[in-house]
Image (cartoon, rainbow, N blue to C red; front, top):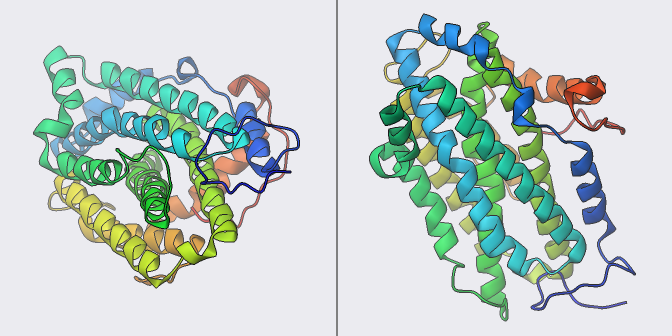
Amino acid sequence: MSTQNLLDPGFELTLRPMRYPDFYERYRDAIKNTWTVEEVDLHSDVADLAKLSPAEQHLIGRLVAFFATGDSIVANNLVLTLYKHINSPEARLYLSRQLFEEAVHVQFYLTLLDTYLPDPEDRAAAFAAVENIPSIREKAGFCFKWINEVEKLERLESQADRRRFLLNLICFAACIEGLFFYGAFAYVYWFRSRGLLHGLATGTNWVFRDETMHMSFAFDVVDTVRKEEPELFDDRLQQEVTDMLREAVEAELQFARDLCGDGLPGMNTESMRQYLECVADQRLTRLGFAAVYGSENPFSFMELQGVQELTNFFERRPSAYQVAVEGTVDLDEDF
């Protein structure tokens, strides 16, 4: 069996003997988790949108503008960085499946914008949010900074190269999929807790499930590298990851200020700060680093979300997903 490490340069093709069977099982689990945008009914949302206050409509407009570009950024990094440097055919199987799921998310948000924003100029502005909405431009800039750090790396020849790659991987798992998206999900479930925008919530349930699996896979990659090259995980890396998450929290808070303004019933910048800090601590501890905030989750509707969606996912009749799912559920997983 090859003694090659996961981040060693090359393009390993051999699936037998299988070096990383857990990655292959993640691929198989992802195949069972198949849904299509056509299964999401957004018609009732149109009537709900008309009931919203101007402040709530502003929040939704900003939220769907972020959705319009967020998954495209993740997909680009997956193809241009992760697939190139994670040297495991089993892992690449999973990444190819993840790329498909990101495409479904992009299609869902395209459909969402077409439904929510019937005016072509409004839709065009939403898709150009990275250029013309400062709070979204700041989040995109954070993403591109970590993409640019590894953009010219063709091979991970040195420890310095591997550290740069690890920071990119951790950024997209912990900060973008694991923090920016989770912040966005909180706004969706806040509306759902008030009996509004059920179509958006249904699609978000399935995106939530996908993103949780994407994040878990990335953290498994980090765990594998930690076992193979423990010298990379020093105090310097911990500090860099901690600083990165702090920066991500601040970028997401700037977005929250834009969305919430002076505050809405049950949703304001301060409660979002507590939620984001709680999530950031969860990401740090999952990575084996010390928590830094000590905040508790202020949103009861998010405390229930992980358990509810996992339960619904495994109990939902097969017609709701194209492939029925078998298996067990770990209800202690952090969300």
